[in-house]
Amino acid sequence: LVAWQEQAEKPVSLVNLAWALATSMVRPKADVLHSLGDAATLMLEQFKANEFSITLWAFARLACFHEKLFATSLARLCHDKVLQRDMHPQGLSNSLWAFARLVEARPNRNHASLAQGLGMLVPTCRR
Image 1 (cartoon, helix red, strand yellow):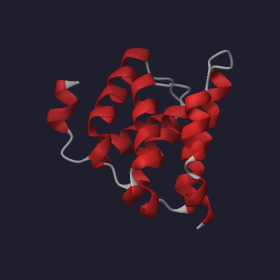
Image 2 (cartoon, rainbow, N blue to C red):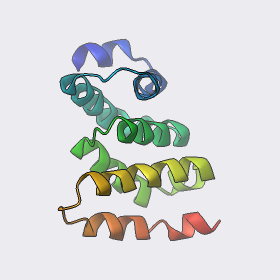
Image 3 (cartoon, helix red, strand yellow):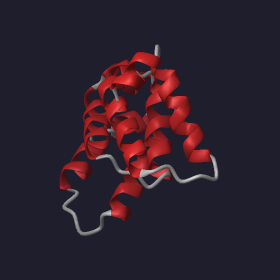
Image 4 (cartoon, one colour):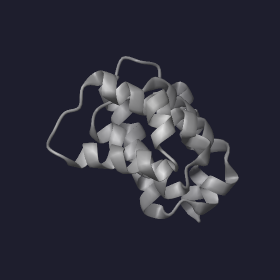
């Protein structure tokens, strides 16, 4: 994780790596994805709207539901008015799809906070 942070000058580097892993025909090891998720969580506040949605999409596509990344992402998506304003429809769709995949992957969990949080996005969806 420390080595990754030293190499990544901008969040786009991390996002590009996540996207490349998600679209390639390889399955990264769990520890690689966990480290990438840790780094993304730490840098999440720096992500632009498109970087944010691509990261969530990539992790969901990889079926890697990094607890802290998804929880922190939900909080930012629901409370960051600048992110909501800057999020284009495709980005919002990608983010919602990623959260839907999380629910599908963990059907026995209580997703009440997720449903409540996503409900806060209704005004964003209506614009």
